[in-house]
Every structure is written in C-alpha cells, then in structure tokens.
Image (cartoon, rainbow, N blue to C red; front, side, top):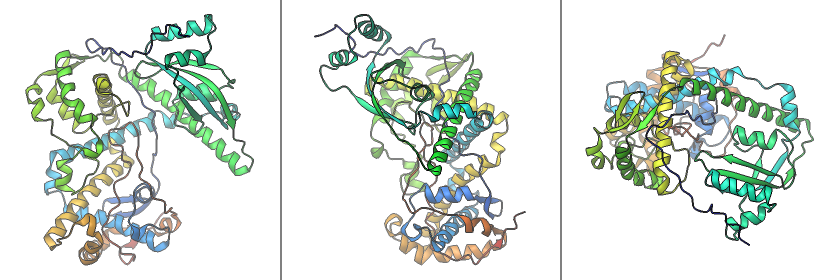
Length: 508
C-alpha cells in the first residue's frame, strides 16, 4: 500500500544573496596546556607531551618502534636532532623565504590560537556537577540500535508525521513506502561515539522505550532525521577500575558538551550582525571550476610545493592546476562581508593560510555549491576568531608558540636534511634508502651537531625516565579543522642511542 509520500526527491535551493551569516561551531577537542619541558636546545624546547605525540601519533621507523630504553633514547635523539637541523638551517634559506611556507606556518599558528581560544574561553570555565554525572551514569552503559530515515524538507516531515500520528500508520510501513521496499537503514549509538550535544541529550539524558519514535532532528544540510529505537544492550561495569573509568568518561563528555555550548554562544556573539552576501554569477562560475578539484580523490592530488621542498606528499596542499582557469575571475567580486567586497583573488589569499573545511566528508557534485558556501562561511568565522585571539595575545601563549615551532622546525629540518644529503653526495632515494642515508651520512652529521651545540642542550632526565610508550602504529587526525594532521612526521635523522652530550636539566 502506498501513502502518497512525495518525499523521495531531494532539492536544496542555495540562498546566496542577502544571506544572514550564522557561526557554525564544530565540536572541539582540547589538548592544552602542555606539561613539563623534557629538553631545551637553545631557545627551542621539547615537552613531555610533544615527545609522546611525536612518538605515538605518527608511524615510527622500525629502529625505534618498541617501548624500551634504547628505542626511547633514539626517539629523544631524533627530536633533538630535528631542532639542531633547524638551527643549522637558520632563517636565510629558500624555504623560510617562500611565501607559501610562511602562510602555512601562520595557518598552523592560527589554528592553535583558535583551539586555545576554546580552551581559555570555554573548556577551562565549565565543570559538570556530581548530580548530572550520576544521572547520565545510569544510561551510559546502553548501546542503542536505531532505524532511521532522512527526509529532505519540512513539508515531507509534516506529511510523514501526519500519516504516523493522525492516521496511525506504523514507522516501518511508511519507511518501506519511502524506500521502495528496500531495507530500513540501521546504526548503533554508543556512549563513546563522537555524538553532537543534541544527540547525546536525546540518547543519554533520559531513558528511552523500545519502538519509541525520535525526531524530526534537523541536519546541517537542512534535511531531517526521524529515528525509531529498535532496541538496546546494556554493558554493566563491575570492577572498581571500570566504574572509575566510566565515571571519568562521563565527566569528560559532559565537560566537553558544556564547553561546546559556551563556545558556541561566544562565537555567535562575536559574529552577531555580520552579513555575508555572495555575488551569484561569480559564485557559480567559480564553483563550476573548483568542484572537480575538490571532489577528486585525495590520492590523486599532487602538490608541487611539497615535491619541491620535501620530496614527498605531506599535508600542505597547494595544487594550482585550477589557477589558469580562474584567471579571468580573480578581480571579480565573490562576496561582500560587512560592506567590504572580497574578490576571488582576496579569497585565494585567505586559502593560503586556511584551506577550506567542508562540513560533509562526502557529497555529490550537485551539492558542491551549497557545501562550498558553508565552507566559506566557516572560513570567515575563523578569521573573526583569529582577530579576537590576536587581540587577547594568544599568539604569545607558550603552548601556541611551541606548537607552531614544532611544525616550523620539523619542515625546516627536512629541508636542511635534503639539502645536506644532496651536498654530501647521497645518490639514493631517501624514502627507499633511508637506512643507508642515516648510516653513511646522517649519523656522523648528527654526532657533529650534538658536539657543536652541546652547551646549549639540557635534558630533563628525571622526566625522560618516567615516559612509557606503546609499540602500536597510529596516525592521528583531527576532524573539522583546516590542518587535520595532529603531529608532524617522525624525524628520520639518526639511529644514535647514546645521550653523551648536553647537560642535565635542573628542575626546581
């Protein structure tokens, strides 16, 4: 039986003229501030946290992959060598003078500033109370199985709800009609999932019943979800350790939710009254050019800048293949922000330090204009947060400076490594022959730098002795940010396992 639900056709009208700009705040994660200093190399530092991230959040080479004392010393020597290579490179070199490199480092710094903005203005100011933790604790063990439908607009939702509530037609029957008798989609909802505050509140603030209908819940793309609770399992914790872990997990989750809400309020206030209006003709001409570039597989993207300076593909994405296509558009107005006209050239310049971040990870070609509009809006939001962060002096906060310097020194050291190997006569392919490069060229060079800069190196041996690592390969990414790679690649510079240089750091 069919119920005349005309909701299979999905249409999404892009409103770009006279659009009121609302700040969209993604869920944030915070890892600030850093802990104690592990090593000093002149005015450069390596924290314990940085040591762990560089070892745990990247793929370490086989010669230092294990958690034993020798391998930990190789890791420390590698990180110190990275700083020494950066010192040797100095500031008068091809890489530092390159505008694209400087913009990349500035983008990294500003991303860290925005994260510190979140930490200082929101995360550090909230704390869930015990009563709230106890309430959620009763439900945290549940793992829900839900069935769901995605409906394209309010009219289709209204039709669905009328047929369900007034006419008494079951969810399953309506769903089968909409889906043309195919299987109703299902998914699991777990407490540990990366849930939005809205979904967390739906599933873990109060007890739900089997077959209970949930929604409609509005999505970012203005479609709607309607869900049915198909059932759940409950994981009961018994041991003191498990109980403590669940309690702490709930506390962390509630703290993050409260911080996200406070952050959203502050950013909304910051963006209050801001108006973004797109020029329709330029907008569609530009999106026609950019859509193939952004939609093609990441594996197919090549960045000439990366190839030139580092010899392999890393995070910097400076594909300029579209440049000639948009030459005629560069001086055309793309949008007006608070009465100020941004040309396509102005927009391109902003992208050099803030690559676009799309809210949806996968979407169809016809959705690109709308998703592009959201990404531009989020970029503008971040520009305003940057201004507020600079005003607050967050660029001078030690953890922001250390994070920025970590990326700067990593990339500069790779540039210096490649430059040194070329000058020393290494003929191999470093990616394939790195062990030969280390044994014959880099180990002796690192030894000489350790002696040259020995008086500038101090090591916190007490902190080093306490560090424990895993030997599990992991590559960490952060979602919904312009620069998703959490940690620079591990510095493949030396296999030295001796700490026979520098001085012991005096920790007060």
